[in-house]
Length: 146
Image 1 (tube, rainbow, N blue to C red):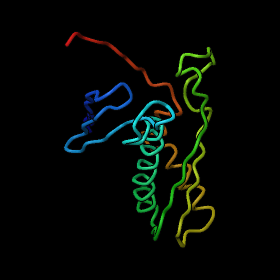
Image 2 (tube, rainbow, N blue to C red):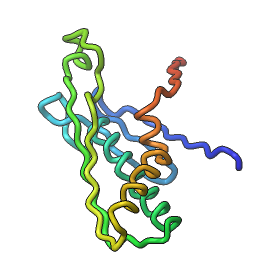
Image 3 (cartoon, rainbow, N blue to C red):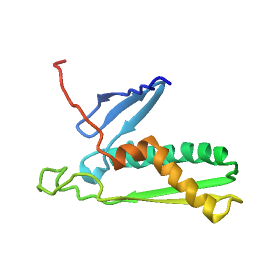
């Protein structure tokens, strides 16, 4: 199977806001007013959580089907805390990102507890977003003049 390639393109609209195109979709990424933004969109770290929720949803339904059980309803709540002082240039803390991310999945299904535990293990193993968060992913940032 060939690799799937995904791309997005962002155009800055202000020091805190960027409009991102992903295929035919537009996403507005902004900061809340208390961080200097206009609160016109979710923050980058909120989109990170949303991305994980979306991936867990897709993989969750896919794996349930493969395992032969149905899901009537699935709710996913995610959260994490981070210290903004490094991002704001006010600290040399070890990291700018989340200290950890907690995921709570509420599931309406007839599957038994052992099946659900196996389902969760497989989801965590196969979700591309959780893989990128849990493992080091090479990142290359470069620039060119406009």
